[in-house]
Picture (tube, rainbow, N blue to C red):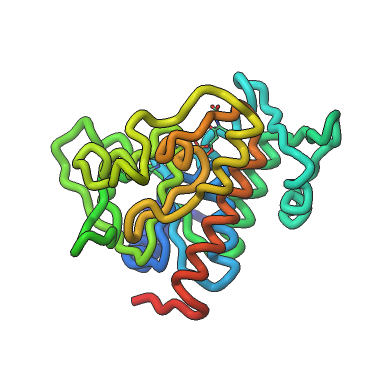
Length: 262
Ligand code: 48H
């Protein structure tokens, strides 16, 4: 093996990463949270030629997928989701009553790979701490390094986008940031957050109600329940995947056929 230059290795990381970071300061769509709904949304947006950047606060993208139910790495999905899994090349096994078992690790790993191959960029260890607003419209997100925020007095930077998706799961971080400033109409959002478990209603809710919650801010996945007061559904993931697909279609329609990025 040839002699390796340790500084070259560091130089490659620095150049590649910072080139990517600079390119991603302006996107068509920023998705906050790389759970099942955020990843599926990113895939379909990127596939239709939209410049999409996913910001994830943890080291590993995948959100709640890895843990399946109660840290048993099996994800359950319903019949309607099988064509979507087939599109990704993810295997599933029919178990009973229209319910299928999927290996959580395969689900998370394949989704991540497909998102990148479709052209989206995923930046991990990025904590979105706030939104940027201009003239009552969300124009981007305020981001700090995970580990830095909130423990050190370091100011964040900003990533701009024409549309921002809150896909942060139960926390609904961006919805909360508007809610606490009383910027969301009590007629459109719930004050109390998600409701008790009802798998059937919860699964339909996150798909049917995935929408723009404030000009420029969209919700998908569990954030939909948290925003509009829908039931939680427990460890079933079909609704999350379909919610991500639905929001991608709605955003693509709003942005138009050939969005331009600066
Ligand atoms: C950057 C952030 C921030 C932040 C959080 O929780 P997720 O898996 O979200 P969904 O909606 O795609 O899927 C929900 C599902 O996993 C689930 O919890 C279900 C079905 N529960 C049912 C029930 O009854 O309990 O992923 C959200 C992602 C995670 O990776 C977070 O780390 C990330 O968002 N995130 N990223 N900045 N401020 N906050």
